[in-house]
Image (cartoon, rainbow, N blue to C red; front, top):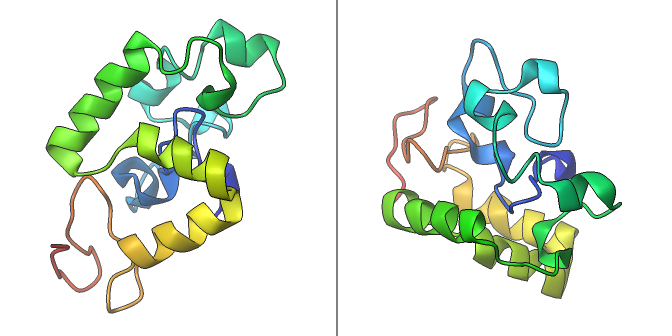
Length: 131
């Protein structure tokens, strides 16, 4: 897992379908804007003034944390994908990025060794479904 693929909102882009797909791979929210998935390039959180004007990498440093947009995104991901950006940010803040990444690797790694996307919940290599 690449630490550069953790978005300011707490999304682990290592497990995003746009990053794991075979064609037109997204570089992650913290990556080059030219290689971003269209939705990510326009993201209100990614383009937040606080993040642009500060040297902070994550939303948990913002005085408005968690903002309305982050709460909406978190609710959608909890409901549809059984993951939480706010919980991810809390883990990063409390335990550090490296511990978070080790935990994520265990959580999203298939028995075949490939990463499973939080969006698909099925391994693109062997077809196993994450429960």
